[in-house]
Length: 241
Image (cartoon, rainbow, N blue to C red; front, side, top):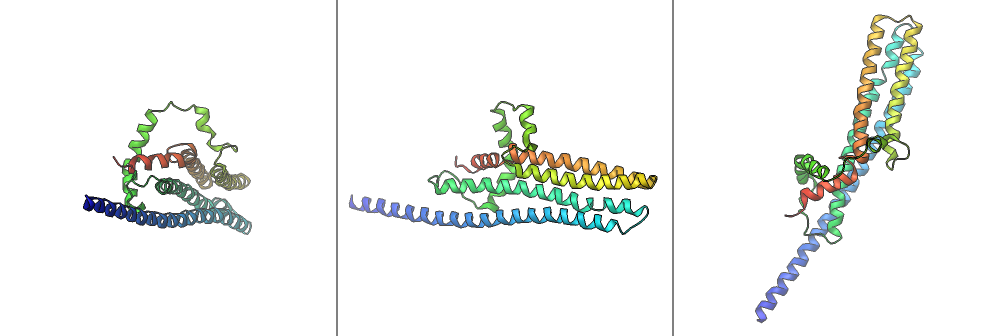
């Protein structure tokens, strides 16, 4: 009997030590993920700044050129704006996914240690990518469909995540300024065929990018890539059976 009690006590102590060790690992991972999120946001800021400063610099240089080349110069900033626009919102999806995983780690520290599998972010990421669509479709089938008005609210100033909307508008306005300047210069120079073709291509690219970026804004604010949605996906994909 005494031996059994001693065994149980030893097992309890071992479990406590294991839990303490696992919590330390989780705390370390939380610190690392905090650094990752900070780097991602700084990266976004750099791309945002590059788009603005690059556009201003090229447009100011355009004044020193004459003739038809000015049309090309006014459209040149789009070569900076569009990639920065796409990368900025691609980083946004990475931020929400990482933040969702952080929420699961924080839950584990608050008393749900045995509820989830702790694999580490890099090992858990392939599981997330493979199963996120299935989990989201399952969750959506249980909920009533949102109204169209609610879905369009992603770009309204009153949205909770107005940071994403403001950046979307900024990139769009930079693109429109370039197109308008090029169009005005083209009209002033009686519009050569090549200039018209370039302007048309620029309009198409801006339209496609704005639509694609809008889908990402909508997704990270109230859709399948929002903070809450990513946390739910991680919850279902990492919880123990």
